[in-house]
Amino acid sequence: MFDPAEAQLDFRISGTDFFATILMPTLAARLQREAPGVRLQLIDLVPDNYVEALERRNVDLALLPERPFPAWTAHEPLFHAAFAVIARHGHPALTAAGVAPGDVVPMDLFCALDHVLCSPDGRFHGLGDAALTHEGRSRRVAISVPVFEGVLQVVAASDMIALFPRALAEHREQSSAITVYAAPMKVSAPLLCMIWHRRHEGEPAHLWLRGVVREILAPLGAPCASSEVS
Image 1 (spheres, one colour):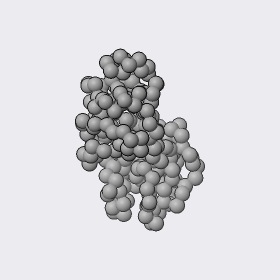
Image 2 (cartoon, one colour; image 1 turned 45 degrees about the vertical axis):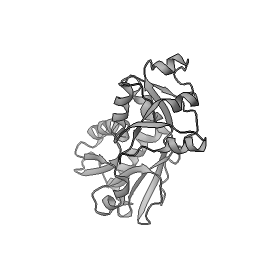
Image 3 (cartoon, one colour; image 1 turned 120 degrees about the vertical axis):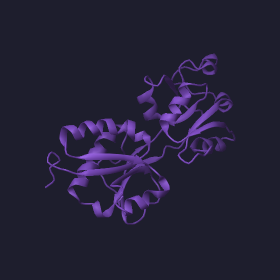
Image 4 (spheres, rainbow, N blue to C red; image 1 turned 135 degrees about the horizontal axis):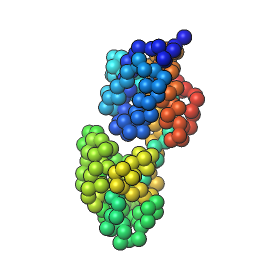
């Protein structure tokens, strides 16, 4: 029987810096309280290499958008990552247009402003561009950065705006001096999952880790909070 209070283990989780903010502070507090002998590393998610990391035992758990997963893995859906628009407090163009916090940013204004994009591989194209193309519109991505924290810093220091995970935007709204608005078009909300190698399926320690991660992320709207999917 696994006793987290007595365990002396190391775990590695792969995920973007979204999880460094949304998951890790609460998880760290839980570890100190319930499993003081457990150490945990959050490493950068490289989506194209997550399979190799799981196969080589470099990673115990990966957190990433749903996609076709290999048959030798198991996964569990966690939550849909809805997107919002963020801009710095008092953004002059939004203020002049009378757009209040939480309002929909008018499409013409949304497309006219420069954008910041989070892209680990340096792309200038993302989910927002696909949604705009569906509406027959486009935007100009002026800055691409590899982490969400970089997007926040650029937005807070400029008149650029960004499509950004709503949960993280609301969590950082006050500390990062940003304001959250609604997008003028429908942006698909990727389903975030945790995935692991089947060799860990029934391991008591791994079951405990998955349960703690599931519990912490449940407030984000977990669709299947207690079911694991093969």
